[in-house]
Length: 107
Length: 202
Image (cartoon, rainbow over all chains, first blue to last red; front, side, top):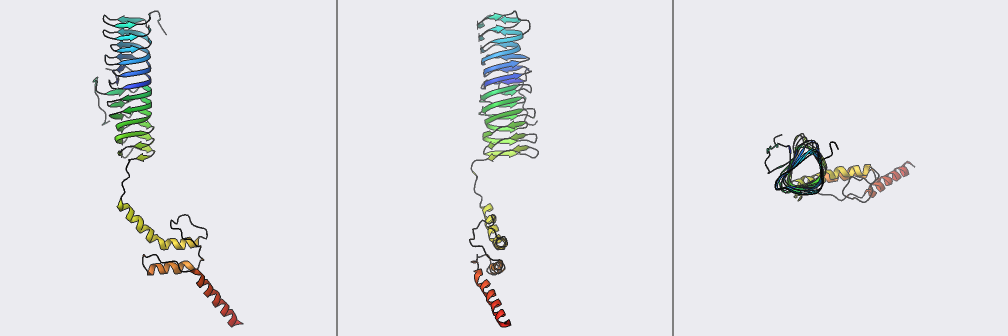
């Protein structure tokens, strides 16, 4: 599993960047840029622009998402914002509002 | 590494991995383990653990802090701050308990709150002043300028003849501070003798 976990009672207001998987269970505002995968879990609330390789969202995200590989909106997630990625999956039960752009091969 | 707690994928602890940089405000009600970098502001109601690979450049408010990595900034803890053998810190610590072990590196101020008055430390201080009094007086006289080290302002500059007598008197009477003998009569006496001698020679 991922090295970095932002726990459910944690609030971060600012920028997060790194080269490893990140699991968010808490609240993050600002900007997230990773070279690996981001997991936004059910308890999480993210208000941020996201730039990652992969992202899996089960919680709440407000902001634009750009992934170099894949964006996965799981059931029960709530996403507001534009999504750009070569692969975008939206599961049954997911709530999403925004633009989808799958054209980009490489950003 | 004794402080390392590996909660594998348990939701009870927050871990900032070694390649992660967080820039901004971070707050929370759970333990936080930093193996990467955190810059800005950090406030927790529980324990902050900075592991050897961790770097925190922030003003930190926590309950406990265990530092094995690098911290640059001020830490204010409601319970304790511990700098382990591998810990390096620059900044001020404000905490009722501060532990700095051998091998730790620290530069800054430490404030443990109530600086409790210790009578044991006051007694030697008083003794030191009484003991040093006779010593101080000749030194003071030897240096014609007003010496800055003397805590007791002894007003008048005395001629070099006086100190020997003054210190002798002090020793004879014990630790009781004797009033400095007026140097003037001695001088006058010497002068008088000289004059008398001169008169005799003539």
